[in-house]
Image (tube, rainbow, N blue to C red; front, side, top):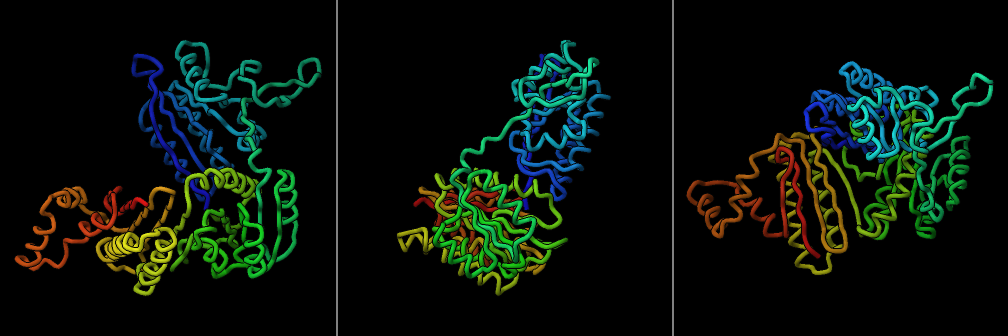
Length: 441
Protein backbone atom coordinates (compact mmCIF):
# COMPACT_ATOMS: atom_id res chain seq x y z
CA UNK A 1 0.00 0.00 0.00
CA UNK A 2 1.36 3.48 -0.83
CA UNK A 3 2.63 5.05 2.38
CA UNK A 4 3.00 8.57 3.68
CA UNK A 5 6.00 9.84 5.63
CA UNK A 6 6.50 13.24 7.21
CA UNK A 7 9.37 15.18 8.71
CA UNK A 8 8.99 18.41 10.67
CA UNK A 9 11.49 21.22 11.12
CA UNK A 10 11.35 24.93 11.96
CA UNK A 11 12.64 28.05 10.29
CA UNK A 12 12.99 31.50 11.84
CA UNK A 13 11.57 34.21 9.59
CA UNK A 14 12.45 36.93 12.11
CA UNK A 15 14.30 37.39 15.35
CA UNK A 16 11.07 37.25 17.36
CA UNK A 17 9.09 34.13 18.13
CA UNK A 18 6.21 35.33 15.96
CA UNK A 19 8.31 34.52 12.90
CA UNK A 20 8.88 30.88 13.82
CA UNK A 21 7.62 28.77 10.95
CA UNK A 22 6.89 25.04 10.94
CA UNK A 23 8.05 23.27 7.80
CA UNK A 24 6.41 19.91 7.12
CA UNK A 25 8.04 17.77 4.43
CA UNK A 26 5.71 15.05 3.13
CA UNK A 27 6.58 12.00 1.06
CA UNK A 28 4.17 9.51 -0.49
CA UNK A 29 0.43 9.37 -1.06
CA UNK A 30 -2.33 11.27 0.72
CA UNK A 31 -5.18 8.82 0.15
CA UNK A 32 -7.80 6.93 2.14
CA UNK A 33 -5.20 4.64 3.73
CA UNK A 34 -2.91 7.50 4.77
CA UNK A 35 -5.38 10.29 5.53
CA UNK A 36 -5.16 9.83 9.30
CA UNK A 37 -1.35 10.04 9.09
CA UNK A 38 -1.67 13.26 7.10
CA UNK A 39 -4.21 14.77 9.49
CA UNK A 40 -2.11 13.82 12.51
CA UNK A 41 0.94 15.49 10.94
CA UNK A 42 -1.07 18.68 10.39
CA UNK A 43 -2.47 18.54 13.92
CA UNK A 44 0.96 18.06 15.48
CA UNK A 45 2.31 20.99 13.48
CA UNK A 46 -0.63 23.16 14.55
CA UNK A 47 -0.13 22.24 18.22
CA UNK A 48 3.38 23.65 18.05
CA UNK A 49 1.63 27.00 18.34
CA UNK A 50 3.46 28.70 15.48
CA UNK A 51 1.60 31.10 13.18
CA UNK A 52 3.03 29.78 9.93
CA UNK A 53 3.13 26.41 8.21
CA UNK A 54 4.88 25.53 4.95
CA UNK A 55 3.97 22.17 3.41
CA UNK A 56 6.71 20.82 1.16
CA UNK A 57 4.92 18.71 -1.48
CA UNK A 58 8.05 17.84 -3.49
CA UNK A 59 7.64 14.10 -2.88
CA UNK A 60 3.83 13.96 -2.68
CA UNK A 61 2.55 11.85 -5.56
CA UNK A 62 -1.21 12.03 -4.99
CA UNK A 63 -3.87 13.71 -2.83
CA UNK A 64 -7.54 12.76 -2.61
CA UNK A 65 -10.57 14.88 -1.75
CA UNK A 66 -10.35 14.08 1.97
CA UNK A 67 -6.76 15.29 2.06
CA UNK A 68 -7.78 18.47 0.25
CA UNK A 69 -10.53 19.08 2.82
CA UNK A 70 -7.90 18.85 5.59
CA UNK A 71 -5.82 21.48 3.81
CA UNK A 72 -8.82 23.78 3.65
CA UNK A 73 -9.58 23.34 7.37
CA UNK A 74 -6.03 23.98 8.50
CA UNK A 75 -5.63 26.90 6.11
CA UNK A 76 -8.58 28.52 7.91
CA UNK A 77 -7.17 27.62 11.33
CA UNK A 78 -3.88 29.36 10.55
CA UNK A 79 -5.74 32.35 9.10
CA UNK A 80 -7.71 32.71 12.34
CA UNK A 81 -4.41 32.53 14.20
CA UNK A 82 -3.42 35.58 12.11
CA UNK A 83 -0.87 33.47 10.31
CA UNK A 84 -0.63 31.61 7.03
CA UNK A 85 -0.33 28.15 5.46
CA UNK A 86 1.19 27.70 2.03
CA UNK A 87 2.16 24.83 -0.28
CA UNK A 88 5.52 24.55 -2.05
CA UNK A 89 6.76 22.36 -4.87
CA UNK A 90 3.37 20.94 -5.86
CA UNK A 91 3.48 18.67 -8.90
CA UNK A 92 0.98 19.39 -11.67
CA UNK A 93 -0.54 15.90 -11.34
CA UNK A 94 -1.21 16.64 -7.65
CA UNK A 95 -2.25 20.28 -7.97
CA UNK A 96 -4.62 19.79 -10.91
CA UNK A 97 -7.44 18.36 -8.79
CA UNK A 98 -7.01 21.17 -6.26
CA UNK A 99 -7.17 23.77 -9.00
CA UNK A 100 -10.31 22.22 -10.51
CA UNK A 101 -11.95 22.43 -7.08
CA UNK A 102 -10.98 26.08 -6.77
CA UNK A 103 -8.42 25.64 -3.97
CA UNK A 104 -5.74 27.59 -5.85
CA UNK A 105 -7.95 30.67 -5.73
CA UNK A 106 -7.34 31.15 -2.00
CA UNK A 107 -4.64 28.79 -0.72
CA UNK A 108 -1.12 30.06 -1.54
CA UNK A 109 0.87 27.85 -3.91
CA UNK A 110 4.54 28.82 -4.32
CA UNK A 111 7.28 27.56 -6.58
CA UNK A 112 9.70 26.10 -4.01
CA UNK A 113 10.84 26.35 -0.39
CA UNK A 114 12.86 29.51 -1.07
CA UNK A 115 9.73 31.19 -2.45
CA UNK A 116 7.72 29.88 0.51
CA UNK A 117 10.08 31.43 3.03
CA UNK A 118 10.05 34.70 1.09
CA UNK A 119 6.25 34.61 1.22
CA UNK A 120 6.31 34.24 5.04
CA UNK A 121 8.78 37.13 5.31
CA UNK A 122 6.54 39.29 3.11
CA UNK A 123 3.55 38.34 5.27
CA UNK A 124 5.33 39.52 8.41
CA UNK A 125 6.22 42.78 6.67
CA UNK A 126 2.64 43.29 5.54
CA UNK A 127 3.37 42.68 1.86
CA UNK A 128 1.28 39.49 1.59
CA UNK A 129 -1.94 38.08 2.99
CA UNK A 130 -3.01 34.60 4.05
CA UNK A 131 -4.83 34.12 0.75
CA UNK A 132 -3.32 33.10 -2.56
CA UNK A 133 -1.07 35.57 -4.32
CA UNK A 134 -2.88 37.92 -6.73
CA UNK A 135 -2.85 36.96 -10.43
CA UNK A 136 0.40 37.97 -12.08
CA UNK A 137 2.51 37.80 -8.92
CA UNK A 138 3.01 34.05 -8.80
CA UNK A 139 6.26 32.45 -9.82
CA UNK A 140 5.90 31.15 -13.40
CA UNK A 141 4.56 27.65 -13.45
CA UNK A 142 1.43 26.38 -15.11
CA UNK A 143 -0.74 28.79 -17.06
CA UNK A 144 -4.45 28.17 -16.64
CA UNK A 145 -7.66 29.85 -17.69
CA UNK A 146 -9.21 31.79 -14.83
CA UNK A 147 -12.52 32.80 -16.36
CA UNK A 148 -13.21 35.86 -18.53
CA UNK A 149 -12.09 39.44 -18.07
CA UNK A 150 -14.51 42.39 -18.01
CA UNK A 151 -13.98 42.69 -21.76
CA UNK A 152 -15.00 39.06 -22.28
CA UNK A 153 -11.48 37.90 -23.10
CA UNK A 154 -10.02 34.73 -21.54
CA UNK A 155 -8.09 35.66 -18.43
CA UNK A 156 -4.92 33.67 -17.70
CA UNK A 157 -2.95 33.34 -14.54
CA UNK A 158 0.09 31.34 -13.52
CA UNK A 159 -0.15 28.66 -10.85
CA UNK A 160 3.34 27.55 -9.80
CA UNK A 161 2.82 23.84 -10.29
CA UNK A 162 5.83 21.73 -11.11
CA UNK A 163 5.89 19.38 -14.09
CA UNK A 164 7.41 16.03 -13.17
CA UNK A 165 10.25 14.92 -15.39
CA UNK A 166 9.53 11.53 -16.95
CA UNK A 167 12.50 11.20 -19.29
CA UNK A 168 13.81 8.27 -17.24
CA UNK A 169 10.66 6.29 -18.09
CA UNK A 170 11.33 6.14 -21.82
CA UNK A 171 13.26 2.88 -21.59
CA UNK A 172 11.17 1.38 -18.81
CA UNK A 173 9.87 -2.16 -19.29
CA UNK A 174 6.48 -2.86 -17.74
CA UNK A 175 4.70 -6.19 -17.31
CA UNK A 176 1.00 -6.20 -16.38
CA UNK A 177 -0.72 -9.42 -15.28
CA UNK A 178 -4.53 -9.32 -15.16
CA UNK A 179 -7.27 -11.95 -15.70
CA UNK A 180 -8.53 -10.40 -18.95
CA UNK A 181 -8.40 -7.43 -21.30
CA UNK A 182 -10.66 -4.65 -20.08
CA UNK A 183 -11.11 -0.90 -20.20
CA UNK A 184 -8.67 -0.72 -17.29
CA UNK A 185 -5.92 -2.55 -19.19
CA UNK A 186 -6.50 -0.42 -22.28
CA UNK A 187 -6.07 2.73 -20.18
CA UNK A 188 -2.85 1.30 -18.74
CA UNK A 189 -1.52 0.50 -22.20
CA UNK A 190 -2.32 4.01 -23.41
CA UNK A 191 -0.60 5.54 -20.39
CA UNK A 192 2.63 3.54 -20.61
CA UNK A 193 2.79 3.83 -24.39
CA UNK A 194 2.52 7.61 -24.02
CA UNK A 195 5.68 7.43 -21.90
CA UNK A 196 7.40 5.39 -24.63
CA UNK A 197 7.62 2.41 -22.29
CA UNK A 198 7.90 -1.24 -23.32
CA UNK A 199 4.49 -2.58 -22.20
CA UNK A 200 3.42 -6.24 -22.04
CA UNK A 201 0.04 -7.59 -20.93
CA UNK A 202 -0.38 -11.23 -19.84
CA UNK A 203 -3.09 -13.24 -18.08
CA UNK A 204 -1.31 -16.37 -16.81
CA UNK A 205 1.26 -16.52 -13.99
CA UNK A 206 3.37 -19.30 -15.50
CA UNK A 207 3.56 -17.47 -18.82
CA UNK A 208 4.36 -14.28 -16.92
CA UNK A 209 7.26 -15.96 -15.11
CA UNK A 210 8.64 -17.14 -18.45
CA UNK A 211 8.23 -13.69 -20.01
CA UNK A 212 9.84 -12.17 -16.95
CA UNK A 213 13.05 -14.09 -17.67
CA UNK A 214 13.01 -12.90 -21.28
CA UNK A 215 12.39 -9.18 -20.68
CA UNK A 216 13.64 -8.47 -17.10
CA UNK A 217 10.99 -5.81 -16.45
CA UNK A 218 11.56 -2.75 -14.26
CA UNK A 219 7.97 -2.84 -13.01
CA UNK A 220 5.30 -5.52 -12.66
CA UNK A 221 1.65 -4.75 -11.91
CA UNK A 222 -0.09 -7.99 -10.90
CA UNK A 223 -3.76 -8.55 -10.12
CA UNK A 224 -4.26 -10.67 -7.00
CA UNK A 225 -6.79 -12.83 -8.88
CA UNK A 226 -3.92 -14.07 -11.07
CA UNK A 227 -1.59 -14.58 -8.12
CA UNK A 228 -3.80 -15.46 -5.10
CA UNK A 229 -1.07 -17.36 -3.23
CA UNK A 230 1.69 -14.88 -4.01
CA UNK A 231 3.61 -17.34 -6.19
CA UNK A 232 4.78 -14.70 -8.66
CA UNK A 233 5.83 -12.22 -5.97
CA UNK A 234 7.67 -14.94 -4.03
CA UNK A 235 9.54 -16.25 -7.09
CA UNK A 236 10.67 -12.75 -8.04
CA UNK A 237 11.59 -11.39 -4.64
CA UNK A 238 13.66 -14.23 -3.21
CA UNK A 239 16.14 -14.29 -6.10
CA UNK A 240 19.08 -11.93 -5.97
CA UNK A 241 18.97 -11.00 -9.64
CA UNK A 242 15.23 -10.25 -9.59
CA UNK A 243 14.43 -8.72 -6.21
CA UNK A 244 15.01 -5.10 -7.26
CA UNK A 245 12.14 -5.33 -9.74
CA UNK A 246 9.30 -3.16 -8.43
CA UNK A 247 6.13 -5.22 -7.96
CA UNK A 248 2.78 -3.53 -7.36
CA UNK A 249 -0.15 -5.78 -6.52
CA UNK A 250 -3.81 -4.86 -6.79
CA UNK A 251 -6.29 -6.53 -4.44
CA UNK A 252 -10.03 -6.99 -4.76
CA UNK A 253 -12.56 -4.77 -3.01
CA UNK A 254 -12.18 -4.20 0.74
CA UNK A 255 -9.47 -6.82 1.28
CA UNK A 256 -7.74 -6.50 4.66
CA UNK A 257 -4.28 -7.37 3.40
CA UNK A 258 -2.56 -6.94 6.76
CA UNK A 259 -5.38 -8.60 8.70
CA UNK A 260 -5.23 -11.73 6.53
CA UNK A 261 -1.46 -11.97 6.77
CA UNK A 262 0.12 -15.23 7.98
CA UNK A 263 3.46 -15.39 6.16
CA UNK A 264 3.95 -12.88 3.38
CA UNK A 265 6.86 -11.87 1.19
CA UNK A 266 5.89 -8.31 0.45
CA UNK A 267 5.52 -6.68 -2.91
CA UNK A 268 6.92 -3.14 -3.11
CA UNK A 269 3.45 -1.62 -2.83
CA UNK A 270 -0.18 -2.51 -3.21
CA UNK A 271 -3.59 -0.97 -3.86
CA UNK A 272 -6.96 -2.24 -2.71
CA UNK A 273 -10.01 -1.61 -4.89
CA UNK A 274 -11.66 0.79 -5.27
CA UNK A 275 -8.75 3.08 -6.12
CA UNK A 276 -8.43 5.94 -8.55
CA UNK A 277 -6.52 5.28 -11.78
CA UNK A 278 -4.52 8.47 -11.16
CA UNK A 279 -3.32 6.94 -7.89
CA UNK A 280 -2.03 3.88 -9.77
CA UNK A 281 -0.37 6.05 -12.43
CA UNK A 282 1.34 8.17 -9.78
CA UNK A 283 2.52 5.10 -7.91
CA UNK A 284 3.85 3.27 -10.98
CA UNK A 285 5.68 6.33 -12.29
CA UNK A 286 7.20 7.01 -8.87
CA UNK A 287 8.41 3.40 -8.74
CA UNK A 288 9.82 3.58 -12.27
CA UNK A 289 11.81 6.64 -11.26
CA UNK A 290 13.00 4.98 -8.04
CA UNK A 291 14.14 1.61 -9.43
CA UNK A 292 17.11 2.86 -11.53
CA UNK A 293 18.39 4.81 -8.51
CA UNK A 294 18.08 1.79 -6.23
CA UNK A 295 19.90 -0.42 -8.73
CA UNK A 296 22.91 1.88 -8.49
CA UNK A 297 23.06 1.30 -4.73
CA UNK A 298 21.44 -2.03 -3.85
CA UNK A 299 22.01 -5.58 -5.00
CA UNK A 300 19.03 -7.19 -3.28
CA UNK A 301 16.00 -6.18 -1.20
CA UNK A 302 13.67 -8.65 0.49
CA UNK A 303 10.89 -7.76 2.91
CA UNK A 304 8.74 -10.38 4.63
CA UNK A 305 6.36 -10.46 7.58
CA UNK A 306 4.75 -13.28 9.49
CA UNK A 307 2.56 -14.17 12.45
CA UNK A 308 4.40 -15.51 15.50
CA UNK A 309 3.78 -19.22 14.95
CA UNK A 310 6.36 -22.02 15.08
CA UNK A 311 5.99 -23.05 11.43
CA UNK A 312 6.32 -19.44 10.29
CA UNK A 313 9.45 -18.93 12.37
CA UNK A 314 11.00 -22.03 10.77
CA UNK A 315 10.10 -20.70 7.33
CA UNK A 316 11.68 -17.35 8.22
CA UNK A 317 14.91 -19.16 9.15
CA UNK A 318 15.04 -20.95 5.79
CA UNK A 319 14.29 -17.81 3.80
CA UNK A 320 16.93 -15.83 5.71
CA UNK A 321 19.50 -18.56 5.06
CA UNK A 322 18.68 -18.51 1.32
CA UNK A 323 19.10 -14.73 1.11
CA UNK A 324 22.40 -14.75 3.00
CA UNK A 325 23.88 -17.61 0.96
CA UNK A 326 23.13 -15.67 -2.23
CA UNK A 327 24.82 -12.52 -0.96
CA UNK A 328 27.84 -13.58 1.14
CA UNK A 329 30.64 -15.41 -0.64
CA UNK A 330 32.55 -16.42 2.50
CA UNK A 331 30.74 -19.31 4.14
CA UNK A 332 31.91 -18.47 7.68
CA UNK A 333 30.53 -14.92 7.37
CA UNK A 334 27.20 -16.19 6.04
CA UNK A 335 26.96 -18.69 8.91
CA UNK A 336 27.78 -16.03 11.48
CA UNK A 337 25.20 -13.54 10.24
CA UNK A 338 22.63 -16.29 9.91
CA UNK A 339 23.15 -17.09 13.61
CA UNK A 340 22.58 -13.40 14.43
CA UNK A 341 19.41 -13.24 12.32
CA UNK A 342 18.03 -16.40 13.95
CA UNK A 343 18.74 -14.92 17.36
CA UNK A 344 17.01 -11.69 16.40
CA UNK A 345 13.91 -13.54 15.16
CA UNK A 346 13.87 -15.70 18.30
CA UNK A 347 14.12 -12.63 20.53
CA UNK A 348 11.32 -10.93 18.59
CA UNK A 349 9.09 -13.99 19.00
CA UNK A 350 9.83 -14.82 22.64
CA UNK A 351 10.74 -11.54 24.34
CA UNK A 352 9.03 -9.06 22.02
CA UNK A 353 5.78 -10.70 20.97
CA UNK A 354 5.64 -13.05 23.97
CA UNK A 355 4.80 -15.89 21.54
CA UNK A 356 1.40 -14.32 20.86
CA UNK A 357 0.37 -15.72 17.48
CA UNK A 358 -1.71 -12.63 16.64
CA UNK A 359 1.41 -10.46 16.65
CA UNK A 360 3.72 -10.19 13.65
CA UNK A 361 7.47 -10.04 13.07
CA UNK A 362 8.71 -7.85 10.22
CA UNK A 363 12.08 -8.62 8.57
CA UNK A 364 13.90 -6.53 5.97
CA UNK A 365 17.09 -7.51 4.12
CA UNK A 366 18.93 -4.72 2.28
CA UNK A 367 22.06 -5.75 0.41
CA UNK A 368 24.32 -3.19 -1.22
CA UNK A 369 27.81 -3.55 -2.64
CA UNK A 370 29.52 -2.98 0.71
CA UNK A 371 27.28 -4.47 3.40
CA UNK A 372 24.15 -6.37 4.34
CA UNK A 373 21.61 -4.67 6.58
CA UNK A 374 18.96 -6.71 8.41
CA UNK A 375 16.09 -5.00 10.24
CA UNK A 376 13.88 -7.07 12.56
CA UNK A 377 10.82 -5.48 14.14
CA UNK A 378 8.34 -6.99 16.58
CA UNK A 379 5.13 -5.68 18.13
CA UNK A 380 6.28 -5.86 21.73
CA UNK A 381 6.64 -3.06 24.28
CA UNK A 382 10.43 -2.91 23.93
CA UNK A 383 13.08 -2.96 26.66
CA UNK A 384 15.97 -0.96 28.12
CA UNK A 385 18.32 -1.70 25.25
CA UNK A 386 20.84 1.00 26.19
CA UNK A 387 21.65 -0.86 29.40
CA UNK A 388 22.23 -4.16 27.59
CA UNK A 389 24.21 -2.55 24.77
CA UNK A 390 26.49 -0.88 27.28
CA UNK A 391 27.35 -4.28 28.75
CA UNK A 392 28.51 -5.84 25.46
CA UNK A 393 31.32 -3.28 25.12
CA UNK A 394 32.88 -4.60 28.30
CA UNK A 395 36.05 -6.61 27.57
CA UNK A 396 34.83 -9.24 30.01
CA UNK A 397 31.22 -9.28 28.77
CA UNK A 398 31.20 -12.99 28.07
CA UNK A 399 32.85 -13.94 31.35
CA UNK A 400 30.36 -11.85 33.30
CA UNK A 401 27.44 -13.39 31.39
CA UNK A 402 28.87 -16.87 32.04
CA UNK A 403 29.09 -16.16 35.78
CA UNK A 404 25.47 -15.01 35.83
CA UNK A 405 24.47 -18.27 34.16
CA UNK A 406 26.50 -20.39 36.60
CA UNK A 407 25.98 -18.44 39.81
CA UNK A 408 22.43 -17.14 39.36
CA UNK A 409 21.01 -19.82 37.12
CA UNK A 410 20.17 -17.25 34.44
CA UNK A 411 18.73 -18.85 31.30
CA UNK A 412 19.64 -16.03 28.92
CA UNK A 413 21.79 -12.95 28.67
CA UNK A 414 23.92 -13.95 25.70
CA UNK A 415 21.59 -12.97 22.85
CA UNK A 416 22.68 -9.37 22.26
CA UNK A 417 26.32 -10.34 22.82
CA UNK A 418 25.99 -13.12 20.24
CA UNK A 419 24.41 -10.80 17.66
CA UNK A 420 27.12 -8.19 18.20
CA UNK A 421 29.88 -10.81 17.73
CA UNK A 422 28.26 -12.22 14.56
CA UNK A 423 27.74 -8.83 12.88
CA UNK A 424 29.74 -5.62 12.54
CA UNK A 425 27.16 -3.21 13.96
CA UNK A 426 23.91 -3.50 15.87
CA UNK A 427 21.56 -0.80 17.08
CA UNK A 428 18.04 -0.58 18.45
CA UNK A 429 15.45 2.11 17.80
CA UNK A 430 11.93 2.95 18.84
CA UNK A 431 11.12 1.48 22.24
CA UNK A 432 13.62 -1.27 21.59
CA UNK A 433 11.39 -3.35 19.33
CA UNK A 434 13.34 -2.51 16.15
CA UNK A 435 16.78 -4.07 15.71
CA UNK A 436 19.19 -3.14 12.92
CA UNK A 437 22.26 -5.28 12.19
CA UNK A 438 24.95 -4.71 9.58
CA UNK A 439 27.63 -7.02 8.19
CA UNK A 440 30.37 -5.73 5.92
CA UNK A 441 30.97 -7.67 2.71
